[in-house]
Length: 87
Image 1 (cartoon, one colour):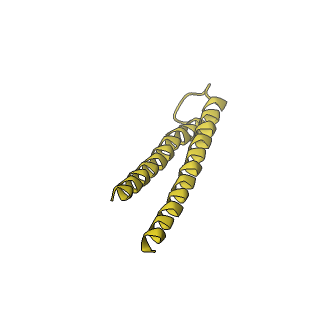
Image 2 (cartoon, one colour; image 1 turned 90 degrees about the vertical axis):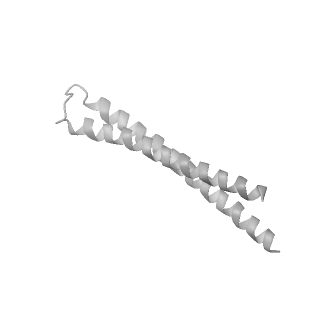
Image 3 (cartoon, rainbow, N blue to C red; image 1 turned 45 degrees about the horizontal axis):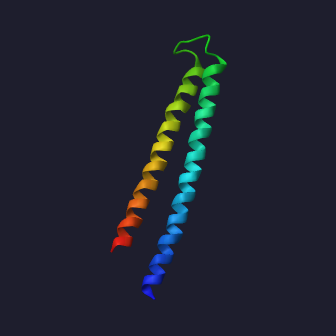
């Protein structure tokens, strides 16, 4: 009985992690698209005083961090579930 409860909780937790990974993946791609659009809007004035360019670059960098964190969370959860299956 206790084993079934533990497996049920792990399965539910796994679904939540996959949902979180999907949401972070969507957010990362959205930030990447916004960053590219903002960079291309006013690229003619290429300097550090161009606010839209600087914010666009921030979105580009932020999208990489969001994707990396989401992937890391997913990998840790997969490894944890594999370790629990072995035992």
